[in-house]
Length: 489
Length: 80
Image (tube, rainbow over all chains, first blue to last red; front, side, top):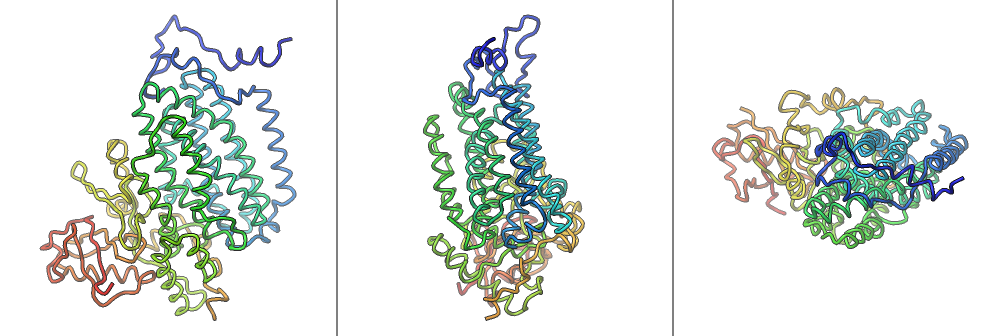
């Protein structure tokens, strides 16, 4: 009987020379990706895990059994009810944005499992697709139990099916990155930047935060998912290596584009959770510290390893790291009824912590919270509308997120006329991405343009109810409706 | 004719849609935007409206100031 290493490559490394058809007919450039290179160039493609199907099934079965055990032990409504109400909203935010994005990644992986240019790549991508099914199902399964207690958890499944502004932004990112990308762009954008650069390490951080918050179920969920991400993310490096050898400009562009787009997404989802929704007593580091320690160091090493440059917008990125998620959080707090989770108002202790963690920018943000606090003091608890905006906000024509770039002193929104139509972007990098492929993005309408086209109501309450898909039972509020002990004093 | 503008108030965190009439005075843009942002930024008695880096005469109409739909305007409180 053959030993594992003697038969493994017969199963996962099985390419041959085509005699009946041309290689370009089997792997056309559009679905296979650019640069199109003959298979011989990809022949040495390999990744370190070299998993067999039997090993994959055995390992995944054990991981699922472990998740089920934790769900059975601590996944009941009564367990969730013991968690801090602020933390629960970090859970709702992640639970909604995660599962159906993972489902889109099934499609991206399956395209690579068909059109990836080497058989080992295709094999690993097939496992990646199975991983992503699992990452879809785990949060759907775990959060379903909580829906009967709190209807906002219904957004775990509902979120991506709505026209909520965050879902529009999420789809704009996910559709391009996961549903539409060819295997080369998918490998660089998803496996290298999004997974190796962000989620693989972010999940380690999230797991640690969940542990500190006493949320064993979420901790188990993200740590279990992370072990899969670490494996299938290994598709990226050998693809990037070949692309750099043959078309370094394409490689640099894809890294630059997807780092910026991924950054904006993570700043909102993880920045909110780390700096606002995790109770102060359970915070181990700020979002900026986490990014610098885990994400930037790893990304820098990846760039160095491949001989790539830092993205041209690096100074803008470092500035944004100091304040962007604060700008979005303060804006979203005052438009909290437009989303499906609740917000915590930072009190004196939280603001002192934020000042210590963001010494270069917090002085610019603090007056906003002073004003919001003053409004709560004037209205008293329970009067949500008095600290809530009523005028539609503006959105970026690339990332579809709110125009919160820059600082309160100067918003970095950039305008552009393209084929006679006006566009606006939250930042120079978003405008740059649009200008590189305008035909890809120009037809997409942001929320404001949908309102102006008569496709969505202009009245904010109508917009929230009839377009964003929220109800009085699900729209976001302050976590305690302004009834903070420190506010009464 | 209604003219929707992208309005940015100095001191605020997000751009807002400001809907003005073409024969409204430019000064009304400042008061409308400050009112829309009031839960985050306290309104000030005086504020200038800037378009493409230039301060607009507050007594000009929106049309005479050359503002068109989806232009960016910045409102800067004068005592800041």
